[in-house]
Amino acid sequence: MFHKVLFVIFGIAIFFKDASAQTDICTGKEDSIYSHALQEERTYWIHLPESYADSVQKKYSVIYLLDGDLFFHALVAAQRLYSQGRQPLMPECIIIGILNTDRTRDLTPSKSAYRRDGKRYDGDREIGGGSELFTSYLTDELRIKINKKYRTNNINIIVGHSFGGLFALNTLMYHPQLFDIYVVLDPSFWWDNGKIQKEADKLFETKQFNHIKLYLGIAAKIRPDANNINSNIAGSFINNILPKAIKNGLQVNYKIFSDESHGTVPIPGISDALKIIFQ
Image (cartoon, rainbow, N blue to C red; front, side, top):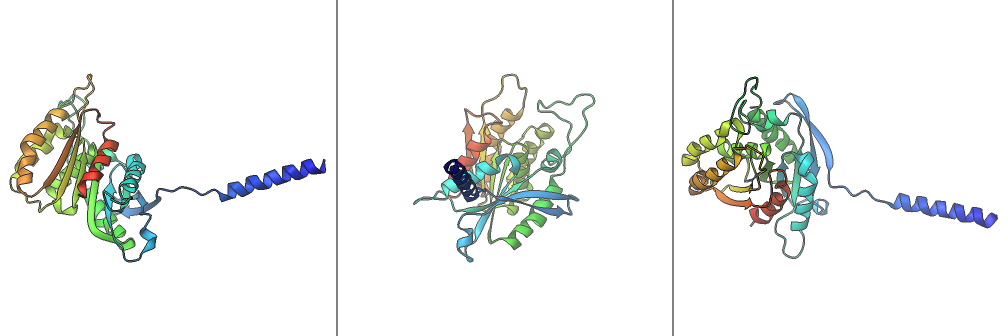
């Protein structure tokens, strides 16, 4: 009996020893800032490179990821993979995942009642149009905090998909100097009946980009039951409008993802962009 009790106690001790030895695997941490531009508290996630603590001298580029709650872990994983090895494809970066409170309000550049099919219906009300205030939060408030708190090298990248891609593209058009690299994944060209295409057609005639980089990823797989003007606008944007910006110094890489839909393109798009934009 004594031996049985001793065995049980020994087993429990081993269990608790093993349990206490377990270590959490963390991709980042959560922080927040009060935005005076948006008049609300805003939460964000941050990932620091593994080498960050090794040196007090090394500085890092910063990737600002829109819809961070959806794509933060995927971006961190891709960045870790591509920044390691004997021939890394990219440098290690600080990653900031931007979480949403009112996504449509913050990421769209104009108020609109138009739907994805380019039509308005009785009872539809205008929504959105707060992207300029969100830009102020992102670059005048959050970026200042990040630059003060962490070792950054003044190279800033923005990554956005869907409405996030629309926001990034609109920022490139009107405030190109705010970021060095724009990763735009299947942007919502349809917003406000394709207004961004019409504005880009005029702006890109004279706007100077001074070697700013754009990666544009477009999903080609369309739901057969979807009535969406996005794909037609995307084709026209690539063939007729982007060449004007390229002529004025914009460095462009784009890829058509034939096997991806709007919902599945972000992760392969992020992966492909990271392999290209730092070359």
